[in-house]
Amino acid sequence: MANTWWELQISCEPALEDSIFWRLEDFGSRGTASESKGNSCLVKAYLPKMQVRLLDLAALSLWLRQDALCAGFSIPSLKWELIDEEDWATSWKQYWKPEEIGDRFLINPAWLPLPETSERLIILLDPGVAFGTGNHATTQLCLESLEMRLASLPEAFMDKSQKKEPVVIADIGCGSGILSIGALLLGAEKVYAVDTDPLAVQSTFSNRTLNNIRPERLIPAAGSVEMVKELSLQPVDGIVCNILADVIIQLIPEMSAIAKPTTWAIFSGILLEQSKAVADTLENNGWIVATLWKKKEWCCLNVRRS
Ligand SMILES: C[S@@+](CC[C@H](N)C(=O)[O-])C[C@H]1O[C@@H](n2cnc3c(N)ncnc32)[C@H](O)[C@@H]1O
Image (tube, rainbow, N blue to C red; front, top):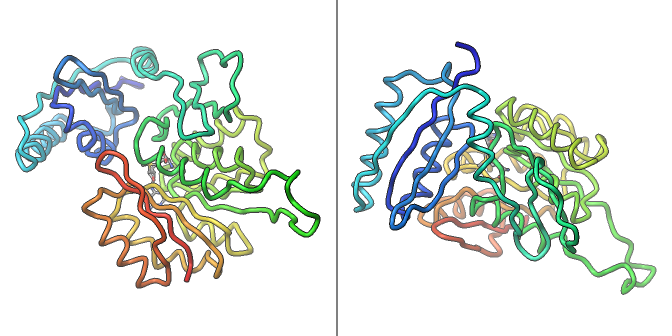
C-alpha cells in the first residue's frame, strides 16, 4: 500500500530518550516525538513502510536493548504498527508546540497561529519528514551559537568606518533548514544549505518559501561539503554543521577547501564523550577550538581557523 508508515512506540527511562532519538534518526526515522509518562518516557517514531522490513524492526529492538544494558538502564519496550499517511501527519504534528530558543528565537509550527506579540525572531517551520524542529539539544546549541557569532553592534552605535561586512554561511546537513533560516534572520547575507538526503533539501526549499526568504539568500542543494565548494565561488565566512560525530570527523578535512583564515565554524551532534576525538581532528586540520557548550549529554564546538 502506498504512503503507509510504521509507527514505533518506545517506552523507556527518561535518561535514555536522547540515545533512542539518535538511534532512530540513524535508522531512518522521518519524525520523532516524545512525551513524559510519569517516571517513564514514550518516544514515537515514524518510518515509511517501504524502507523498513519486519526483520529491520527486530534488529532495532535488539540495538535498543543493547544500548540500554550498556548504559545500565532497564530495557525499553518497543511496539510497532502500520498507519496511513493522514494518521502519520496528525500524530506527529500534535506533539509539536511553539518553542523559544536562546535569547532571540521562537520556533513556530507552520500550522499554528503566530503569537500576537513577540520581540523574538520567528522561524516558521514545517519540517515534513526532515530532522530539525528545534526541540533537540544539538539544534538549540547551534542556534544559540549562531546568536553569539552573528551578534553585532546595533548600527546606531557604529561609526562610519565600521561597515557591516556581508556574512556568507554553509549549513552542512541542513535538515529542515532551521539553522540556515536562523542565520539569515540574525543578519547573514546568504546561506548555502546542503544535505545528502533529498527530502531534507526539499524541506529546506519549502521552509524558505514559508519564511518569505528571497531565493538568492538561501540556496539549498543535495550534497555535502563538495557541493558548497561547487556553488560558492569564494570561501565562506561561517560553517554550521549538526551531524553525528563520526560523520563530522570524516568531513573536517574537506572543509579546509571552503574556509579562509577568518572562517569560524559551529559543530554539534557530538556526544560529550566524543568531543575529544572531534576536537583533535579539528586541530589537526588547522582549526582552533574556542569553546565547548553543552546541553544534556550533547555538546557544540565553536571553532575558528588558526
Ligand atoms: C541532525 S540532522 C540536523 C538538521 C538541522 N541542521 C538541525 O540542526 O536541526 C543531520 C542532517 O545531516 C544530514 N547528513 C548526514 N550525513 C551528511 C553528510 N555527510 N553531508 C551532509 N549532510 C548529511 C542528514 O540527512 C540530516 O538531515
